[in-house]
Image (cartoon, rainbow, N blue to C red; front, side, top):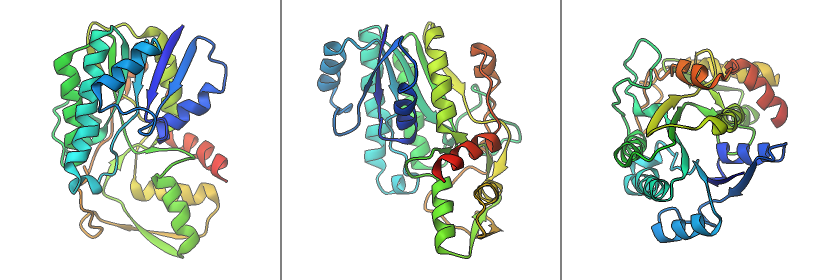
Length: 287
């Protein structure tokens, strides 16, 4: 039986794993932790927890994810997204554990005209993306066996803070809102990603770190995403398109961050739903 430590279990992906664990997964024993119950920045505390609980696999969902705030809190973002990952990587190698680490499409600069493959050159445009890339680099340097880095994009869920819930909330408060239409990617339903991770675990046999991309099928702009949210939820709020230039944010976002997911689909025989299909499921749960 796999004894699985899930870090960051209070986040969108972590909570999705918590909810899936309630279903039939007798082959897995889950240990869900958050920043209050386990300090992954403390090497000794983390090692003691791993040894005491006989952990065999870690799913690292813990991350600093506030993209704009990371511009001012660069040091904190670096600690959580890099130094903590370094601890996990070293302990994974030392104790011969399996590891699945979650990363982001923001490691790319957004200048591609084609969906990014795993081997594409990275060039993050903001402090958040830099901190996540440094975490990836630490794992590649340590190179623990049986380790996957899964990059994902535009994550949302029925719980937590995310674009879907923000749009629904704004539409309760305003008659109309403006959303950027010149940033392209694919929304990822956290429940779909969590399900894919649980399917991958039994086949996790690698000689070192491998990188995979996972996002829901299809593509859209944030504007198109917002329009679909309004349509599915039967709201009457008017969505107006705007540009990144007009809608200023502290952190620069990539204009194009669509991920090529062929590798993960072919390697693990995973079928990825279209983003519109999964969005309907999410909104049905919220409503």
